[in-house]
Length: 266
Picture 1 (cartoon, rainbow, N blue to C red):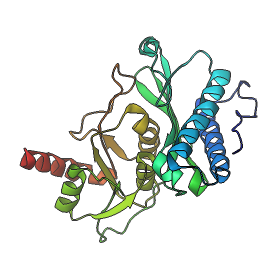
Picture 2: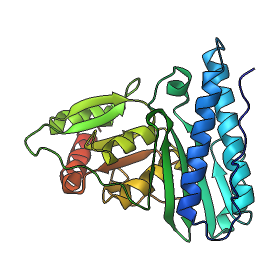
Picture 3: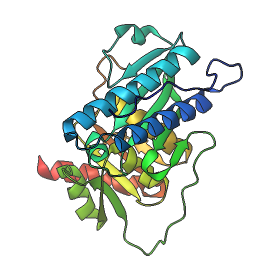
Picture 4: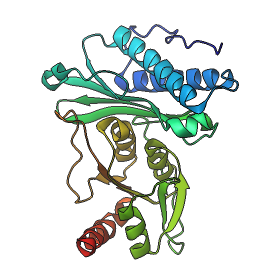
């Protein structure tokens, strides 16, 4: 049997633990539990590995939040949505395992997302990249490396199913496509300077982008919907299908090309 994940062992209800520190600790703990579990699954089918990974990480995050912030609401991909969150002032938005396919294949391009929405805004967040042994957070914010202004732009895209809007915009910008796994990992690639932009259209929910967007904005990057409007969280319907994350100096041109590409395909 693979090892069973354990809830966080540190005293999560101690005084003085900030929301950001809690997000980092929980995301990191879930990530380590996922690595431990994966190392012991042997020849289990990929679908079973995905299922066990989702459940294990959900257990860690739910248990930790119940101890540390028992009065807060939670919106999770792996739990039934409780509508009482709509009246809550604080809602944790979590994706216990973003990139189950990559996780089950033994790859590194997957993530754990933990974000806090409070009174209308994302106020804290962490994205664990367990395969890289790192956690990105809103405080201290990541520092995105500078880039060679003469080099082609690099767009992070899905390695298996890049949306048409992304490939169309990449062509319009003359950007090189950099294929990788989960949504959180792609946003993290922009934060880490391994890509310059990420454009997505279709098939995402609030938990796919909340923590990555919080981290990206803290790092000074642009984040919006495809039309440039704000990303809004803790909505009645958590479906939030489109996303743009890029270096701020690129935002105007990227949004202009998105509008042009969308107009041309209509």
